[in-house]
Each structure stands twice: as C-alpha cells, then as structure tokens.
Length: 156
Image 1 (cartoon, rainbow, N blue to C red):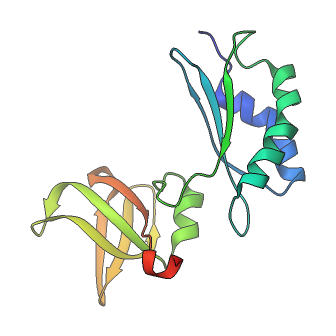
Image 2: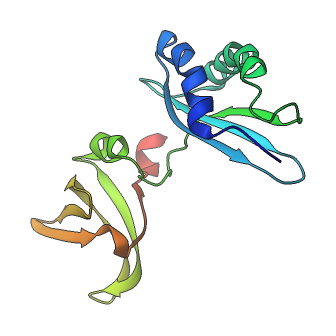
C-alpha cells in the first residue's frame, strides 16, 4: 500500500498539536492485513485516555484531507509513548538527564548486559552515565535499549 511519509502526516497535524499544547513524540505507520497509523503524544503531567480521545477527534478531519493512504482504509490510533519507551531522540535524552535509566547492552560489560544508572548526558555517539560516583561512557552503538527506569514502589 502506498502511503504518505510520516513526516508529511506529522506536518499536517502539528498545528493542532501546538494549539492543544501536545507534543507529537512519533508518528508510525504499520502496514499489513490491518494497516494502522499511530500517533504517540505527550503532555505536561502525562497522557490520559481523555487527551488521546480529544486529539484523535481533532486530527481525524485533517487526516481525511491529507489522505495518508490515498483512499485505502486504515485504523487511527492515538497513544501515550509509554513509561518504558526507548530513548530515541535528543529530546528524549534531555528529558531524562538526572534520572535513573535502564541500559541493556548487546554484549556484556564487566560481565553484565543490564545496568541501572543515572543519565548525566549524551552526544551523537555516546551516553554518559553515573552509578555510585563512578562515571561511565557508553557508545550508543553498543546499547540494545535505553529507557527511563520505572520505580514501581513510587507508583503505588
């Protein structure tokens, strides 16, 4: 199925997001038996079902005009990126500086492939972490996944 680019789609709905003070984290299109366009959003204080529904209703007519699938049917989803979403963009890293992150490596470092440390910074190629006063520099190419650490004790 031919579709417009996710950047074209994001550009079309960005004014609505700006008006509603919503950050578009990612636009994703999955093709297959049941094609789906998913728009991941974030807001100050966190995303709830109400916000997802309001944004869905607001962008639906705009997407009809944009026609991302050139007339083919698809399902529109609006969702939170989730607490355990991998850090991908510069903005993701900046939001997590000073917070605990979980790091999973492709190959062991000091006998371990999983670490929980404080994110101190990043650049194009490396992530800078700290654990118990020890600073660690990891190449991003060696990281299988890095995401915000979830403190389940603090959630309940």
